[in-house]
Image (cartoon, rainbow, N blue to C red; front, side, top):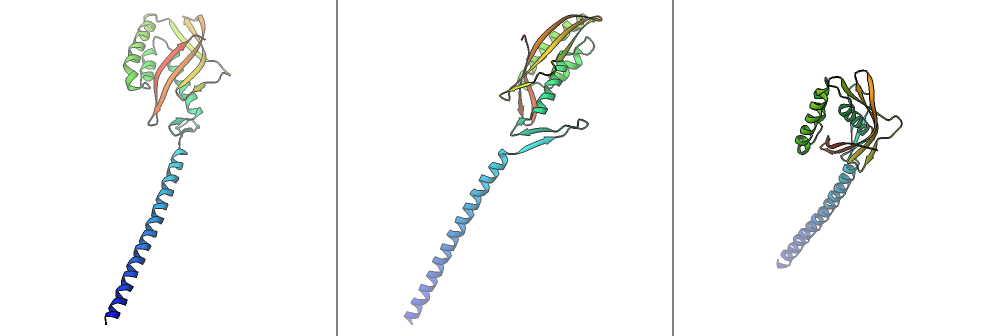
Length: 191
């Protein structure tokens, strides 16, 4: 009888060891699958792209890993230069208010004071206006996904005649945070 009990005890302990081995193998397979999924998700996240198609433009704007595509940056640069450069006594407040909505929170106050001063100067002389034209055929240069450089010509118009024409280079400092384009600085540079 004791021999039978010993054999059944050995059989039971072999079963327990077999189950433990099976659990260890299963855990190992699960661990390998989890590591594979983690690596695959990280690779997919690095290749993630967002496409924005604004109504009525027919263009697609592309963002990859928080970096805007060239088409989007060119359109934003043209929009910013238009707001900043094409001003009259009648539209200066509206243009600058819209331009200020693009500024980052920390630069907003400084930019508001700067544009308020320019607006006061422009409104002082009703017959003076400014027109900026981006040079055709010149590329808008993107440097380090932080700066855009745009070559343009600025014309000062008094009444119906152009009194001065000045070549300029605009430097737009920007960042894209959470999919939002934010200006950090906008400067007119002499070429």
